[in-house]
Every structure is written in structure tokens, then in C-alpha cells.
Length: 335
Image (tube, rainbow, N blue to C red; front, side, top):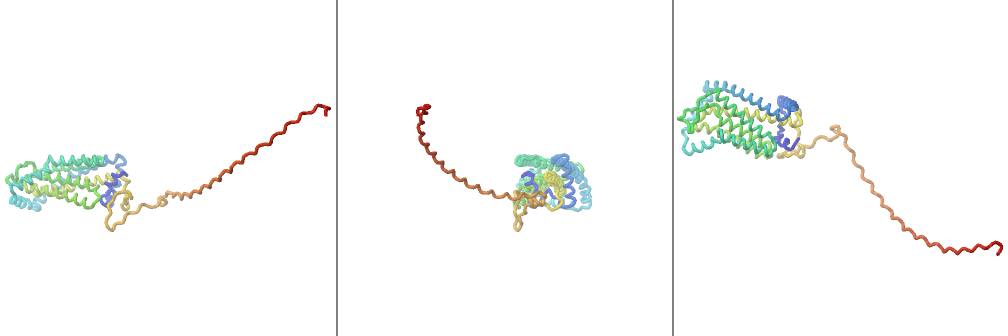
């Protein structure tokens, strides 16, 4: 497993590739087998498409629930009181400030933010995964907004209660709120899976949540949406964001070593993992012989090489004595 996959595999001490329930383990095993057949990223794309279909179906189901709520005058009973409260607390300066702020979640600035963050994260991490998740999340929220407005066709608050510029499309769900919730949520998720500090993760989630909530409330304050339009957008955005994150978790499982039916595996000693007070560092895995790998015995110490004895000096060869002169051979009979 690469360093990037190990970094994204853990959210703090939680192993995102582990199924913590029987249903979760079944989905993880299915994702691993499915990814082996077609590849991890194609499996991620198919999972996102299936999730998008579920999100659209959820939008249609929510339409029926919404009709029941409004017919019984339940949560919809807050719409007019909150709108009247907003009108009573407006001022030219405050209206201008909130109008500028709510435009961040509009059809121009929010797509620019999403594309910029997707490109930056993909280039920095050298992976297409951030771009795929952000584009899928944003595209899904846009499709849910279009379907919801066509299905509900709810009328916006009267223009006399709204702050210009006026909007004339159907009211439910609030597109600004839904898109801001999903985009801020997926960006926060992509950031916190790489952040090692708990404080940094809490700060990231808090900023994203405050942004999503305040964008929705700004729509009510400006008289562009009823409160139930914003509430429905929050619910739909949370459902769709959960599906996108689940698809990414299954993708990480497929890219990893498979599903573990037992407890989550501890990180390797080389993995970067924050330490908590009172938390013991996980020990490495079992010894090699426990896994059936024979242990190599110790290497014997090398014997010292004996010293080489010096070669004795060669004694000089004594000079040979002088050879006596040969006597002459006497002639026969003369001696």
C-alpha cells in the first residue's frame, strides 16, 4: 500500500477500510471483489452513479414526507414567523453584507471554489480521487436541486418580503444551501483524512458546518426561501454527502489489502499516526515463525585468522673451494 493510501486510510484512529458492522463488512467484501474485476477507480465511479440514483430517489421520497408535514402544519408553521422576524431586523447595511455573503453559495462563486480546490488537491496529492469526489458531489447536489424544484414547484415567499435581486425559480429545495452544504462537506472530508491533529480536524469541520448553516439562514433572512426549503436542503445534502463518503470508503477498501473481519489492523511503525494521552503504541505483528516463515539462525562469529609466521632469512651459500689443477697424464712406461 502506498504512502498516500495509508494517509487516507485512517481518520484519526479510525480505520476507514474496516467494516464495523456485519452490513459494513459485507459491503466492504463486495466492493473488494467488484474492484478486482473492473479496477478501483471504475468501481468508485459506478458506486457514485448508483449513489446518485439513490439520492434522486430520496428526493422524491422526501417530497411525499414534505407534503405530509406541510399539510399538518408542522415544521412549516415556522416559515412565516421566521420570515417576519427577518423583515423586522433588516437594515440597508446588513442587507448588503448578507447579500454578498449568500452569493458565495451561488451559481458562479461556488463552482469556481469547487474546481479550484479539486485541481489543487489532485495536483498536490497526484491523484484523480479528490477531483472525482468533488465533481461527483457538486454534480449530484445540482441534479437533486433541479429534480426537487421540478417535483415540488413550490412558490417562493412574496416579493414584498424579499431583498433584491429577486429570484423567480421554484423555492424547494434551496439550491444555495444544498450546494454549499455538499461542497463544503466534501472539501472538509478530503482535508481531515490527511490532517494528523485533532484540533485541526475539529477546526476544519467547524468552519464547514458554520458556512453551510449560515448560507442557509441567509436565504431565509433575505426572503428568498422559506425555512422549510433550507431545512430540506440540509437533510438532502447530508444524505448525499454520506453516500459520497461511503463510496470513497469502499474505494479505499478495494485499493487496500481487502476486508478484515476481525478488529482493525494497527498502523505499521512507519505510518504517521497521532498519539493520544494514555494510548499505547500498537506493537508490530507476530514473529515470522508464527506466520509459518522459518527464522534464519544466527550467523556464527568468524574465527580470527592466525598470524602469518615470518619467513626465515636465507643463509648465504658458502663459496666453493678452489679446484686443484689437474695433473698431466703420464705417458705409458715413462714413469
